Length: 394
Image 1 (cartoon, rainbow, N blue to C red):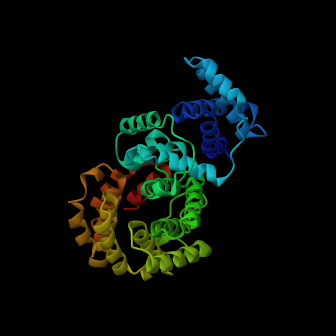
Image 2 (image 1 turned 45 degrees about the vertical axis):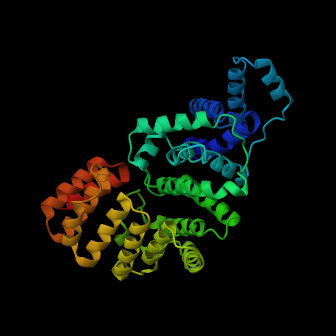
Image 3 (image 1 turned 135 degrees about the horizontal axis):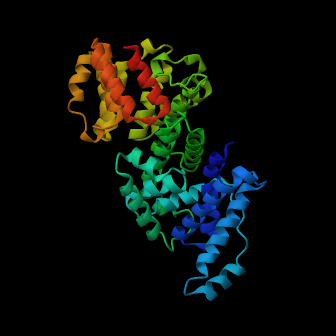
């Protein structure tokens, strides 16, 4: 495992240990960030320690104590800390879920809940979170700073049953974004960041185990399983992107598809329908097709229309337009693209969809220009290479 991946994996558990012992989320998060920085500078030369989590907790604790010594209540706080047991390296799923729920505290706005959790639990950078939200990086930085300040004094414990429902929606959205960043990295040389998608699936499984009758929890887990099942076929041996219609479907994870399909079929029969369940149903239709040409696009279009009516958004609209083009022809889809959400104006996916539909319609020069624009807009190296390859082929 690379050092960067190890640090990302350890960060939430180290933060959990510090917050449990010292309180004050904001100061503990700062201390953990400094410990991670120290590790990133020292470990490449000195080697990864035998107990990386313990090393990080020790360094972060020292930094936290240094800050405490400068505060007005130094004597009282140091006595309390000296009497407390040493923090143990937290290794259970419960600590990650406790941290997740703390980040989704009701005192925070929904936007701040999501941004803080992606930072503290998912380990994403501020710029990566900004791209996920389609907003400026400075906006996300301000949300995280305000959120950490509001959590000062908050108790590090799972919320009572009476508060679970109000935090659940934000927690699910957070897990959804973490999974998406892992499944298709918004930047960098690799298409996947498996540690993020795997962590999202793990935490969602834990939520489903704790809340088995929550339809949207089951729907999100099914969506992740059905989507992640295609990961083995999404890239070539050298890391190049393979689009869905061209993937070798024999390489898809049949066990994950079976589990996800059974889960969403059961959930749709027993719980009120929600956005994650509809997205899982769409993923199931794709996964059930033995060949790309066997895909039931009419059913997918119907599901996207339901999704857009219950949870409208720019990406949902864009995906519905693709389904319209697959059912009614590329000209129908191109006509709808002109009215796409302005938030997508500079997003590479809008240009990529336009290029694909122009190629299907036979307008090769316009398709080539659109592919080139999409390649310039994306910050993902595999996506950029794929889009440029499509442009070159035209």
